[in-house]
Amino acid sequence: MTAFIELDNVSLRYPGGDVLALASTDMKIGQGDFVAVVGPSGCGKSTILKLVAGLIPATTGNVMVDRHEVRGPSKGVGMAFQNPTMLPWLSVRDNVMLPLKIVPPFRQEYGSKKKTEFADRAEALLKQVGLAGFGDKRPWQLSGGMLQRASLCRALIHEPRLLLLDEPFGALDQFTREELWSIMQSLWLDKKPTVILVTHDLREACYLGTRIYMMSARPGRILDIRDVDFARPRTLAMTFTPEFTAIVQHLRMQIADSRGVALEAA
Amino acid sequence: MKLDPRSRQRLLSVLSVLALFLLWELICRLFNVSDLVLPKPSQIFKVLFERLPALMPHATQTLFTTVVGFGLGVLAGVLIGVMIGSSKLAYDVAYPLLVGFNSIPKVAVVPIFVVWFGAGTVPAILTAMTISMFPVVVNVATGLATTEPELEDVLRALGASKTDILWNVGLPRTMPYLFASLKIAISLAFVGSVLSETVAANRGIGNVMMIASGNFDVPLVFAGLFILAFLGVALYAIFSFIEHKVTGWAQRKTDFSIA
Ligand SMILES: Nc1ncnc2c1ncn2[C@@H]1O[C@H](COP(=O)(O)OP(=O)(O)O)[C@@H](O)[C@H]1O
Ligand SMILES: [Mg+2]
Image (cartoon, rainbow over the protein chains, first blue to last red):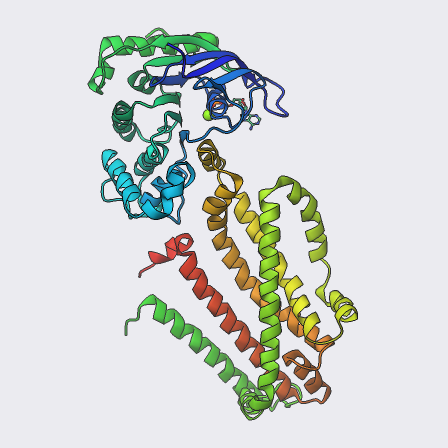
């Protein structure tokens, strides 16, 4: 299998930064994979996403997406962040439809289809994440969890082949977060985009990820790669099984080791 | 009696204006204040009413120079604001110049405009323009600069060009800032045009007031002042109304203030 995304010895130093934000990193991600990247804050997780999206050029090494070297901002890649960044002057539906205004071929048809086909498409997606009937609301009328659902819809409306998620559930409470894991999983199973999810929640990584990349503290580099082969769709109950807990525990220990912190034996 | 908050607010503002005039009238009568110092409101209104036909062309002239100057000022302000708000280089180059330019007292530029364009309409328009431009520039540039970096990443990853981002995010986000600045700019435009009229013009309310004060016709001076106040309030109200229509999303809090 040839990789859909390939990082070959990639490192990054931000302009004016004295230390590497990311030290020689190799990654190989197959098409349709769900990859989770975990690691302590500041280890370069967001930097990896920016490199893959072509928002910043690598200092050394090569980033390949779909067998092409990334040289500038990508086209049509879906992204979602911890901050849902909805535009307050647009309805939730129009916010979700924003990518259709930008990404071809939708872009050319936006004027003629925004009231019909595209609006229906947005409604269908909103329904899928449990926001049926909220399309006409304004963003400020929604809770944080609901905004994050809308933000996922915005990242997926144009059916991207690549979805980059930067701690999208990081600001949510535990209950909402677990609910969104399940929604995220079904969205992924539905269209099978390639997903890179950045998170510092190890349970989240194990629940959603098919493969987990563990990163060390800065300068970030990859410590370990771990495949998680529980069957899909995964359930919340499954996260309490000994097998699942063992994986989470293992990851936690490794990160602690790498930071030289003695974790008290559980 | 119960009134909804909107009507109560309107009623209160009308009453406060009436109360001010009443108090003014009372003080003038009680202390027998001379007309040469402070004419009574009743007298000012009488002058205003009697001389309205003669004053109208001047009022139109002032309104004309103000609105044209304001329009040009806003146009230039938006263009410069977009330029320095969306490019770091343009910002670094233009901002010190703008600040320096803005700190020049505008009275000082009127004689220059007069030398270049002669007395009359043109310097009034240009003064109104230069004085009303600055708040627009600053507000537009600020509005553009406050776009969240995450949102910009989302859009750039989709393949959005700079113009896409400007149209879909930058400019709409700037609207509340722009309209806030328009209300300031229209008042400043009046300052500019009247200033220029008092120095170098043979028409306009500023000119009328200048001549009237030379003749010690103080009630007429005040009548001119009232006309300016009326024009200023009217234009301010128009822009507040448009602002409310266009940028209601930024004022959502007031929607909930139902008592
Ligand atoms: N725009 C930037 N300029 C300079 N340094 C940056 C910039 N963005 C991130 N960094 C630095 O690079 C390192 C990695 O950042 P980031 O990828 O955001 O980490 P993470 O997402 O894992 O928390 C951090 O130490 C951070 O301080
Ligand atoms: Mg980050």
